[in-house]
Amino acid sequence: MTLTVRVISPDKTVWDAAAEEVILPSTTGQLGILSGHAPLLSALDIGVMRVRPSKNQSWVAIALLGGFAEVEQNEVTILVNSAERGDTINLEEARNAFNEAQTRLNQVPAGDRQAQIQATQAFKRARARFQAAGGMI
Picture (tube, rainbow, N blue to C red):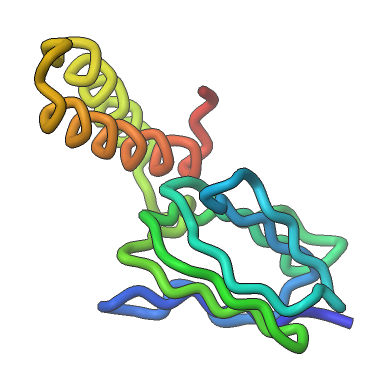
């Protein structure tokens, strides 16, 4: 038995296909979904979702930039602010963006809470894109 998985962002459907297994970046840690999973509604963090279309196929990485996932009756619906398949991300551009975001995060003054939050979010987005593109962190 397989799952029906849909990843929907405001501007496009990033994934709409069957899958054997899904790993989601929930706000409380990685969440694995197999067929027969109990009904679930979970907030998603910025991170990399991994989908295995079938047992004989490789994992597909998708960078998610926050949202929600609903699991019910072997259907996984993921509504996100933004998503991007790893195979469409330029690895070198993602690596450069990650390094720049890391540098900006390290240079934020200790007392500037707003700048710290913004730099952390930018860093998490850059890291997710880099990881989805195949970069090792």
